[in-house]
Image (cartoon, rainbow, N blue to C red):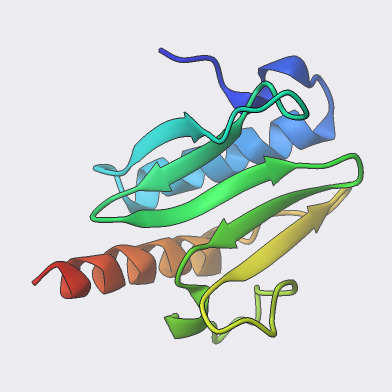
Length: 123
């Protein structure tokens, strides 16, 4: 398996990204994780989950883990998880800071909605 973007971290960000990975696997077992966008400033790249198109990415920053949904603006978010990138026409993101817990049920609902949206676009 390719190295994960979080392999170079050993703190709360790694734990958060692993929890996100686990929830995505539960919500979309057929989703594929790849590492994309490797560059000198980010040699580990960005974990990206796809199923019929990109579902979301998981970027680690000094103070947060950002999960960006490629088509987040088109997804229902009744629990109000999206807290970042709210002004764009396509993407929406969730910023997780140290101590934040990933709310499993609404997060998995967003993943399932992203899978459904991608499947609808493919038809």
